[in-house]
Length: 140
Image (cartoon, rainbow, N blue to C red; front, side):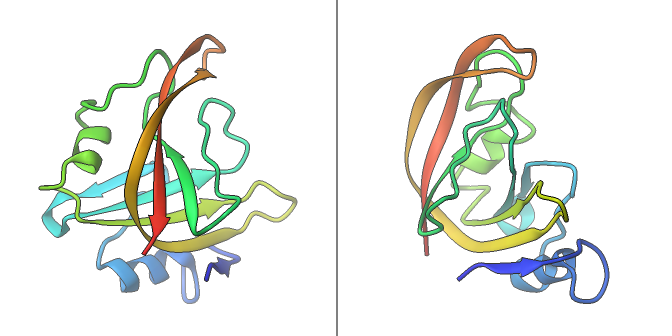
């Protein structure tokens, strides 16, 4: 079951909740937050980000796009994708969403595991078509 938060910081904010659930502090500016020391990665999906193809319509089975704004995405990108996909660095995957409606909200989806991946064609941030890597994940 998803939980909705109206703020990021402070008591009752999602940041505090993530820390209590995962033992890790996410960076609010990054979409993929690997914490190899804790073998955990925290994922953020932001509504209406045209250069990614995240799909969170069904919280039981979501699609999440790897990092890479422009050009073909690379599973071996060192800062985000490699530690996220490396089972020696990530055993626990958590997901939250940032809405872009009138009053921004944060939605905590919880823990997931990767069950597959596909390559799709999608615009980059630079509006040039490219190959992106979209992971299929199920809630655990």
